[in-house]
Image 1 (cartoon, one colour):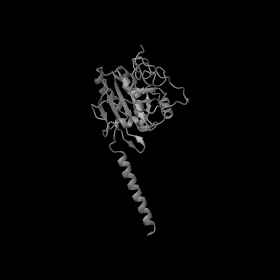
Image 2: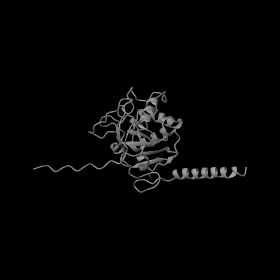
Image 3: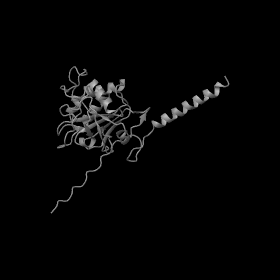
Length: 259
């Protein structure tokens, strides 16, 4: 027993150190703007972009003029994340009526997002944040290698209107919809009879992210600036180069006209 005690003590010490490191990893994250912790209410939303489940590039600043829900979640396919995504899916038609765009964000790969979106028929973009550019910009911490479950509501002027650091996946979508409708001045859309079915409201059989008025549509739809070209979605199973979601550089100045 005396020989085993030091070994057991070592295991206890290692476990304590690991727990402390994990707790520190959940602490206030330092953001690129120099602040710490979650991006506060009133702060400008960062100008970031990322590829969605179909490989189309979604840029946050393209959503000016409408409210935007950016919800971070830990991992595709887990019970809580599936419940949350499906709740947003079932309320998607009402979010569109209120002029609100939804972006889901996690550190999973594009292939994982594509599978998760297809299995649950998600009509809105879920963004690839493997390098944690979006999470860092919003100050969202990582827990056990997964992004914490935090939601940000951004007003039509591009500023953070509300932060939801403690989310109940089952009722969160309805809570955010109510707050977002107040931002856009829209009457709170009423849930249709029989809502909550497996099929997403207003999907019309379209591929995720391409519902009318949704991400990837023509001007007036989410995810595209007026007059901008719409990125082509990738065919299922096709390898797509994924954008990292880094800050976009400012456009180069136009060259002076030759005389």
